[in-house]
Length: 163
Image 1 (cartoon, rainbow, N blue to C red):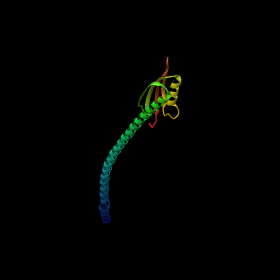
Image 2 (cartoon, one colour):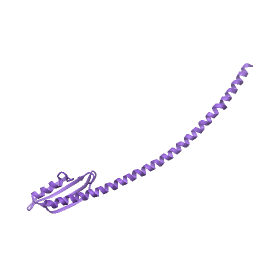
Image 3 (cartoon, one colour):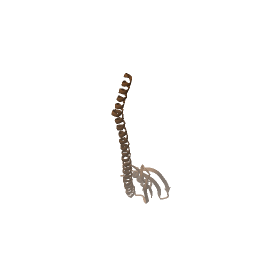
Image 4 (tube, helix red, strand yellow):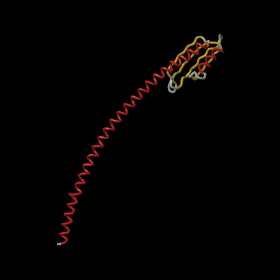
């Protein structure tokens, strides 16, 4: 009879453990899993909102940068043209033709200059345009002797921020 009592007692202890510990633990685990699932879905929603906000911000930054570059490029082209016209007016060359257009990064402006004059005037113009502090670099130069002196065609580049 003792084994039956012991078996019954063990059965009661097992039932007590099952209903007192295992079932509540399983219930808490299920609740925790449900809570985890809910929080994971909430995190995904917040992450989607954050991603959309970051994309909008990046697009806004790109638009502002493009606007700033366009403004700088416009100023760079105008400044380059102005510098060339001023140098040409000081040099004594004649028949000056200037065209300026925006360049492709890192070149801010491409300026083409054609002029006619004496060797001294043409070289003075070239030195003034590509000398230190001019902000222009020589891209291409063509000199053609003529009966009245020298024709010059220069391609000048303004590199940098456009200031």
